[in-house]
Image (cartoon, rainbow, N blue to C red; front, side):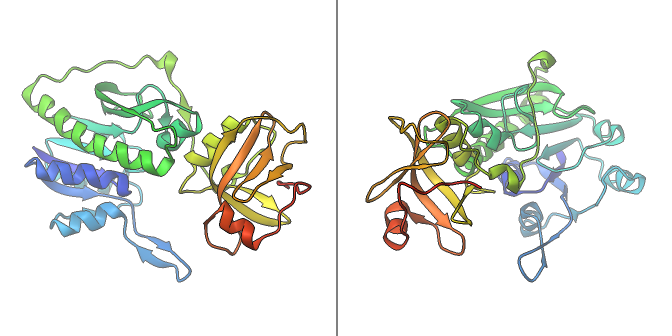
Length: 310
């Protein structure tokens, strides 16, 4: 099929590559504009742009896809279908109705759960045991269209936002190829979502990573994994930011107040939470590199009278 592909981050690249490998003709790749990054604020191209150019595919980077001239620009490519994977802009009706086979989205959750932004991180933060990918026919709502295919992915007990990102990217790529084959063959089944079961989730910002030690240890441990590698969960230690990269829920309860250091061993720090103890295993103090707790404790004096948090 003649495909206009819309996507922006690394997550989208796998699907683009899979469609090319399946023999589809990608007539245009649409992605977000280059953004300044780093201290020098030099412009950096989105991963989809880099991948598309490597395959000789024309790239279009509109600031607002819904503007009339941008819609007309897409129309001249006469796509059979538009595939959307984490593009980052809402498509207007004019685009949704443009291709004969409509617009298909690859969404990184088992819809109708986790509609909206950051579904991968939220699945880990919420302690889900199973996540997955859904392909759907897009409508004007936010992830509200009819579902076409689903594939489940079981989460590892120590799954992070980053590791689940990689799993679902691979799963989504393969599922998209299967979905397009069914659409082209006329065998695709479109199932309306049960909107009463929908869970909407929002964008995650850096401030979201600030740990509330009054919450149960299990919730904090899930937050740490969900925000690894970005934006990371963090707390304050002696006025400095302490990022926590890995932790386990530990047995016992010290009866100290939330955020208090309950025990310091040779290779771990146990912190009292609102419910149970959290064993810190990998940390990063402001201005320092990321390191295992035993290495951190060799260079930093921490006592069981110290307190974490603001």
